[in-house]
Each structure stands twice: as C-alpha cells, then as structure tokens.
Image 1: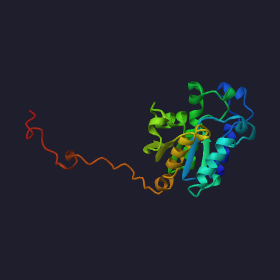
Image 2: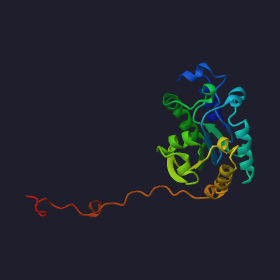
Image 3: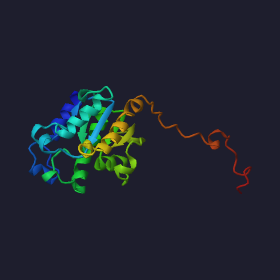
Image 4: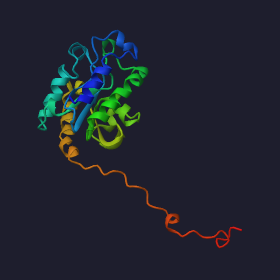
Amino acid sequence: MSAALLAYADEVSGCTRCRLAQGRTQVVFGAGSPSADLMFVGEAPGFHEDKQGIPFVGQAGKLLETLLAGIGLARQDVYIANTLKCRPPGNRDPQPDEVEACEPYLFRQIELIEPIVIATLGNFATKLLSGRPTGITRVHGQEQEAVLGGRKVLLYPLYHPAAALYTPAMLKVLESDFARLPELLGRELVPPSPPAPSFAEFAPAQPAVQLGLF
C-alpha cells in the first residue's frame, strides 16, 4: 500500500461517524494494489470481512477471484473496497445516513488510487457512484464516463458476486460482463474539450455609437 493510502487507512481505522462503529470488530478499509487501474466497489463488509479486516474474503470473494482469473488478473492486481467500511448488523442493507457518513472515505480512496475503471458490484455502489437511482438489473454491463475523485473514470456496473453464487443464469451474465473489462481498461479517456472561444474574444472593440447603442 502506498504511504498516502496507508496513512489514510490508519486515519479511518478509528472512525466513529455512525452507529456501525459500536458493533464492528474492525474497519474494513480496502485491499489490493494502491496503483490499480481497476477498482471494485461493493456494498459492505460481511461476517468474515469484519473478522479479518479484508474485503471479499467469503464465498463471494472466492467467486470474484475466479472471475478475475478468467480475464488474466489476480486480487493483488486490482483494488477492492466497499461503500461502507463497517459491517451492518446481520448484514442488513446500508442505511442512508451510514452511506452518507462513509461516502467521503470511498471518494478519497478513489482520489489516491486513480483507477481507470471502477466496477461497482450491486445496487448500492452503483447508485452511489453513478448518482442515479437506476437499479443494477437495468444498467449492468453498460459503462459510463464519470468524474470521481477529481478525475474522469469509466464506471462499469456489475452484479454482485453474492447474487450469482446460487443462480447459474446470473453467473453467466456476470462472466460475460467481466469479459469486457480488458477492453475497457485499454480505452483512452479523452479529457473534456475546452469551450470554443466566442466571436467576441476576437472582434475588435467598437465604439458604442458605431454599434448603434445610443
């Protein structure tokens, strides 16, 4: 982990911004390459993540590693984080105030890592980072350009691996969407063009009387 990311992880480890601090074992900050081109953002830590302090270490994490291997990548090649850094009780859905409290941590991580592609896993991460209410069923596999962490990235919504563990049809869709990641990582994002100069910038100043203003 880079020095800046390590220092930030240490800072976040004592967070008490929301009620989840009371029931957690530890903050699950994130894991992987601090200079990854590909970043995954999930929902929240589960039981195993809370105990180990590492995101995606349960069955969903194993499937994620299998999917990565299918496109020639390993866990250490990417960066993995969650919308929430603490486990909600009973793995319930994140509450709006919890997401709001944790949101700055995720955006700072994105700023420090500077990924090219951010793959959102499931509804919560997709809605938060896209800024839209559209669910994952409608937008999975459809990349969009976004400005996150102060720079342009490709946002790429994917089904959460947990949803595909017991549904073969959904697993096939996830595999198909994953197969496009190498292409997206190779895509060059063109910075927005500066606005075209207006005619007024080139026109010589004219006396008001000549312009018929008086």
